Length: 378
Ligand SMILES: Cc1cc2nc3c(=O)[nH]c(=O)nc-3n(C[C@H](O)[C@H](O)[C@H](O)COP(=O)(O)OP(=O)(O)OC[C@H]3O[C@@H](n4cnc5c(N)ncnc54)[C@H](O)[C@@H]3O)c2cc1C
Image (tube, rainbow, N blue to C red; front, side):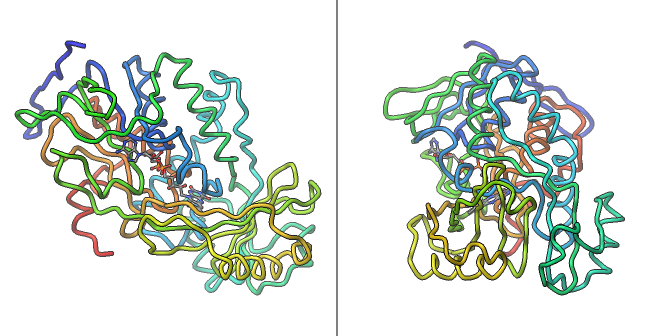
């Protein structure tokens, strides 16, 4: 590939303008959204995944495009989430027009029930420019649930379809995706990685982006330092109702229901510190089913049609690492988005590409730095 990074000095900081070929390890939404952003700016991209693209956390998630109670999170989560939420419709439209696949973006709103401190929640929404009302639409007036807050601007995607569209858009824009191709090590010299090794061959690279989700804490041979990221299992149930029974996301006491337009309803989720075990269990199925039926009685007599678990890339406070690797100047990371990696994808990719190109960052990069993440407690 024969290109070198240009290194120039700007103030006290070394900026690396981006040229050449970028190799992205991990084809979940974090890796594919960086690939898409780079391709749109004219860069060459190859993506590796040890399985099929987008089949891990990015497949297993619910696709709600907002933190569940947005007022409950640290500002760095809000900053990335709100910037992404504002961009999402346009971002998805571009992906859909290139891929000709429908991601099923739907601004269905979210109704939070039993909100503990509604006045503070409404004040937070007003301060952050998020539409919020002290009640729900008429159709939902039959629901109980103490203080209710209706967030009409909250949207969702059908995340497996978004990832399929993103994958197709990357390929149609000239990106290469190698599936079933695990990165196992790197060739490194003088603070630079020159190639990534896989069991079937070595990929030369001018820049490397690590987007390995819940596996980011494992590292690769010769790439010793690892970020503070570990798997957090989430189990999910899927029901099938007639279309239109539920038309908004419902959230109460940690449980959410997500309706799809065709009548599917997802119920989730758990947050389990179970290592890399992504199996499901009957006790959790029964508990999720009972909680879901308490929220939507139509689910009581239905059996779930599917039950799965996914491994979120867990990080302290849900704050991802979007930064350069501390030991290698041409290695970057976009990982650790924990519960909100689908929501945060557009702004995270934008920030990472800003860092790669040496451009002024779209938002303050400090909270997403490697060292900031190392300093946060679990
Ligand atoms: C039950 C559940 C519900 C969720 N609900 C929501 C929601 O409603 N809204 C929201 O915004 N987020 C939600 N999330 C979180 C969201 O799904 C994740 O934050 C996001 O998908 C993380 O994307 P990722 O690309 O970083 O990780 P992943 O999708 O896990 O992708 C990482 C990829 O890296 C690959 N990989 C790992 N190691 C290697 C290697 N050595 N070589 C090559 N490839 C490698 C893996 O195979 C995988 O494909 C949910 C998650 C779960 C589990």
